Length: 415
Image (cartoon, rainbow, N blue to C red; front, side, top):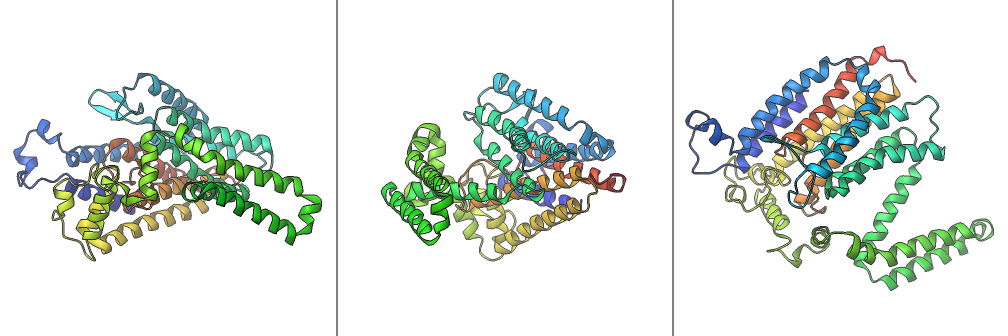
């Protein structure tokens, strides 16, 4: 809880810095009306933090058994809400992912991570679950993949990627590491197919196949069809990557990949955000320029700086030391969550704890990575730092529902 308070406090300070104007009055709370204050992200974030504190009380007061008992019902309700959002939400930046309730906008995709983690944890705590059973694996895959598919259908691919983090929690509970290795290998092959001429890759993988068979005659005698099948799948990925890239991905998604692979290709156009973000982080030096002294921040060089690119404010105004401190706080929080997850007496509580840690880890690494040009810009907020009520509420729910389960862990039986 202390780490949570520190992180949202530092996050609010960075939001204030990113929306600060030298022309603003010294004491805006005393000199400006409520309507004028609502024009500032830092003031609206204060209101979101206040509502989050109320939400924490509710989460801790609710009977801890409700999280397990209502897991499937909450999941089903979220699926319905995602479907409704696809129909009634008006397009915002090409995405139909926001519900407008008067002056408040909420993004159901943020809360789908919570309900999916609950449903997956409930399923994995089933008494008769067998991880090597294909039926059980397909059921778990269906629970995990349905929400991100609906989110992608709403044209919000960034939030959909977060659900892949749940695989780390499944691995802890007995999922075969081969699945993670295959996914990592497929990602590397697709990346190579974008960077290296296709013919060279086909020749290289063919040589590798022949070499493996030559070194291990057992493969030739007993597993040759499997080896050829793997080779054909790899070649199919190499040859088909162009079709996927040109016909499946949308133009803005292709631009983000191009900027990641070649940041200098269009620094004043498609790569403006990343270029300015890297300048801001690099200009901070060891200890930063000081609070409210960042020129990139103050003069709005970085678009979306209070949301997706909030970490560059940390780098510019607080420098390498400030960035390291923030990363250290996140790592401490992740370690603490894993510690709490491991001491749970139920499979449900432990699995859910690892789901929380996995989601926060992916958000942290991808968001920080994209501000430094190490990951594609996919619109993933930095937990507790990025401006926005939906993200703050969703991370608060994830974290404090785990604490609610932990408070009564001794009353659970080991399943």
